[in-house]
Length: 281
Image 1 (cartoon, helix red, strand yellow):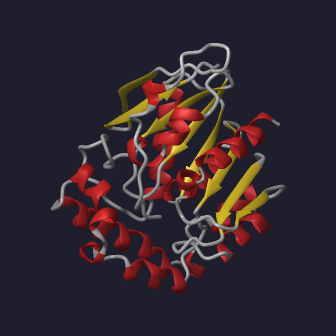
Image 2: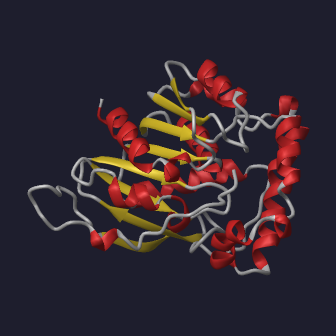
């Protein structure tokens, strides 16, 4: 759900230039694409035949959510695309809102962006809210998705989840270090408003049967799927990855015993290796 930590792309141009040990293309291209009435910001790197889409979490962006992946995933094997969902990061305007179908809307935007960039089939990596978007995307578009990796994600909102969201709804109670990435992106006045809107938006699913976000869609996911969970994740209780494992046919689960919500940033080398191996199988 919440992005609280960040890794930046500043080290990207400091990659070793020694061709004998550094096989990666380090260039990143950035742009905006008109998709479904909005200008979506995206970044693209790599020259591999296997396209991979990175989907960020709540209020997240390529800058704040996927620095180690854009920098270090194998650029010879993969072409990596990260984007800022509408109303997030550098895909503003519009201002972000959270209608009941906001995950479906983000999934459609992501598919249409990849098609506009010329990708007819791709794998996806989704963190937190981005993982939920990925679940919807994979279920709605099985012919487009090669493989899927999700972490920090859930298919429904329980009363325990609701308590977690409400406990972190007031950003003034966060430490300055925790607030800084979002304040840098949105401004100190706007960030609390967008965050409160997100809390209200995710909470609305408790009014659905069983708190479902996309429970009914999981049986329609047919791509090979890797679910990753940080055992110390304070945002996502462990019953959520277990539910995904049970209801996504043929999926597998990896638990990082020391991982928290941002395990792909904290344990980036291990995470990237696991993802590369899974995508290359």
